[in-house]
Image 1 (cartoon, one colour):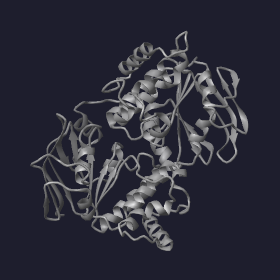
Image 2 (tube, rainbow, N blue to C red; image 1 turned 180 degrees about the vertical axis):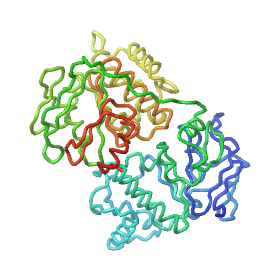
Image 3 (cartoon, rainbow, N blue to C red; image 1 turned 90 degrees about the vertical axis):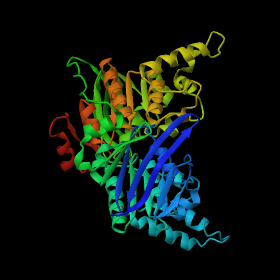
Image 4 (tube, rainbow, N blue to C red; image 1 turned 45 degrees about the vertical axis):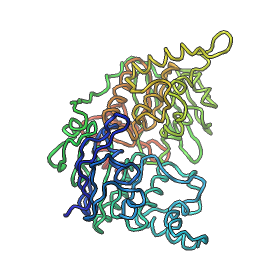
Length: 496
C-alpha cells in the first residue's frame, strides 16, 4: 500500500511545553493504523494538527495524496477527506438524530431551504452503513451515551471520507456495538478508506490494527506490526515502565455481609435480583448495554425506587430515596459518565473534591472552612497520586484518569461503607487504569465493599472476587475468576 498521508518533522510547542518533538508519521491508503500512548503523550495534538484545528510549528510538513502542506486549515482537512470523531461528542442534544447526522451535508450547501425528505434519506443511508436502527425523530440528547457515540460515527461517514480518525470511539460501547463498528471499519477499508484508531483498550488494538505507532512524552517511540509485540511490551513502550497486575487480596472468610439485596425488582429495568457483598469484597457485574446493570446501581444509590424487594446494609433494612439518603447511609457512587454526572467541569478541583462533604467543612458560623478544604484536598491528591496544576484549576484541564480520581476522592471523603463503580476506567489510559484498579483493591483491604460494573471482561476477572452476569434485567450466572473464566463468559453468555 502506498502512503496516503505523510507527516514529517512535526513539532508543536505550547508556551514552553513541547507537545510534539520532530514527529514522522505515515498512514497508508486503506490501512487500519492504531495510535497508542498515555494521556499527555501527544496523540490529541497530532490528531488536531492533522484535522487542521492546531497549527504545527514552522518546519513541519504534511503530505496528502502527493500535495504538500506546511499546515492544514480545518477546511482544507475536510476537503482532503479527513474526518475526526473525538472522544468528547460534538452533537447537538436539542436536535433530532436525523438532523445531527445530516447537519454537515446540508450546512455545506448553504441553501436556505431544507428538504426534510432528503434529510431523512441521508440519515437512513448513513445509518445503514453500520447497521444502526434508531428513531430518527428522537432528540439526540435523550439517547444513552453509547447510542450518541454511534450517531457521531454515523455522521462522519457522510461525504465519502478518505481518512476516518476515531479517538476513543469504543469507550462507551458494548462488545456487540464494538463488533459492529469494527465491521464498518473493515468495509471502509475494502473501499480504500484509511482508519486511524486511538484506544486505551489494548485488546482492541491487537484485534484491529495492521500497524501500531507508539508516542511517549511527545516523541515517536516506534512503529510496530502487532505480531511483533504483546500486551506487556506495548504497555512498556507506552509508559517506559513494567507493570504486573495482581489479583485482589482474598476476602476474610469470616467477614460479615455488608450489603444484602433480596428479590429486588423495578418494572421494565430488572427483575428478582438477589446478591450479597461482604465487607472487603469486590463484586463484579457484567453484561451488555441494556442488561440492567446501571439501573440496579441507581436503585441501590437511591436515585430510583424499586417496585419490590429489599435492601439491607450491615443487617439493617434501608430504603434510600435520594442520593443524599444513600450518602448518609455510607453508600458512594461513581457514575459511568463522569463528565456529565461525576464532575462539574467548569469548577475547580478543590470545589469538586469538597462537594459531597460541605456540611463537614462548615465553621461554627456556617461558613466554609477554606483552609480545611485545601488541607483535605491536598491529602487526597497525595494519597491518590492525582496529577494537577493546582487545586484552583478547573477539572476540565485534567486528563481522563485524573478526572476519575477526583470523582473517587469526593466519594472517599464521605468515608463510605459501600462504593459502587460504574465503568470506572472508561476512556482513561493504561497506566491510569492500572492506578484505579490498584486503588480499588487497596480500598477493599480496608473493609469497603465494592460493586464494580464493567463490560470489559478482563477488568472484572482481574479485579473482582466474584462476578455476576446480567442479561435482560436478571442474573444468569455467577462465577469466581479463574483460568477458564473468560472463555466461559464469552462462549456461554454472548458477551462478545
